Image (cartoon, rainbow, N blue to C red; front, side, top):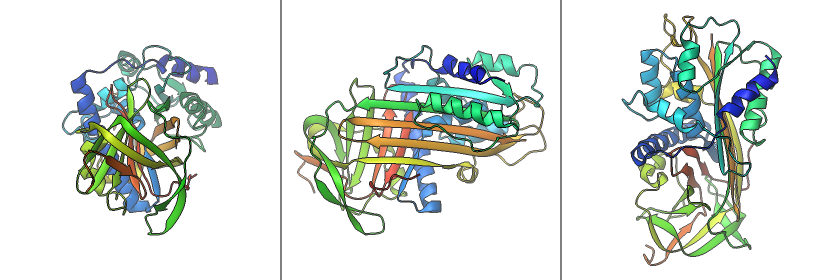
Length: 390
């Protein structure tokens, strides 16, 4: 299949987000925040990395697309693992939120895309293509064992992330199908930070201290939340549809992975109120990526391999998820934020309340969210702002 065919599928799926109902976005954000907390906590426990970033939105889209063809057991497992509990249709709502109906403007803050590629040797059930068409998905079919599939899928990801993530596959994926979710975000702060960023001490997770450029913003234009342990700000972007929550500890010891579950409502932007405040936040950039399959297996997302077809909505052949590759990037400075993410699901066969200070001088949490749909575009922990990652 020519490269233009897969990129044409991208063009059909890169559209302007339709607004979500308030109730839908609230349920979505609750699920996404829970998923972020679980992924980051488990990844931190496994890797002990200073910086971790995940994209609940692109993961939910890629798994939600795969769930369309999954068995009843698979649909339940995916829904629970993605934070939707017993709402089996939850992954479909995430997929719908990532679908766009109009080509976005070149300077649109957010673009999202979904796609699925079937191996040309896979025998699809008769209703598979019409079922996908009902969800506005036009699949590609090609040889997933051949090198061209790597070029085509990487080309799709590069275009979907506006060049921020040029590669997600290093070798032919093989197997039965690859489902993909990707996004690109770029926006300016509603209120820019001060131009000067003086160096300030920042405590790493290992207790050592480094000097980092610390951005500063003061005034009445932000929303804050705090308690005896944490202090946070919900930073708005120009246009009002997106925001980034930054949560820091008041002790200076840093946010831990286990803290994130208690901070779920914070990451969702709940109970923040306008107040006079002062914010100190380091510039940071991060490129992250990993195979999430071991963590998702531990979370129960992928059911045990069954004798029967795992994706009967697509094929009667016995295939199951083998890898869930995710790559993410983010860059935060005085002007705003650039972020991108792509996920490929690969099958095998005591502060003065009048002045709230948020000082991110030790490991802090962040969550970049779409306030209309409830999608959590990116979330993570930053323990070393000077360590950009690979």
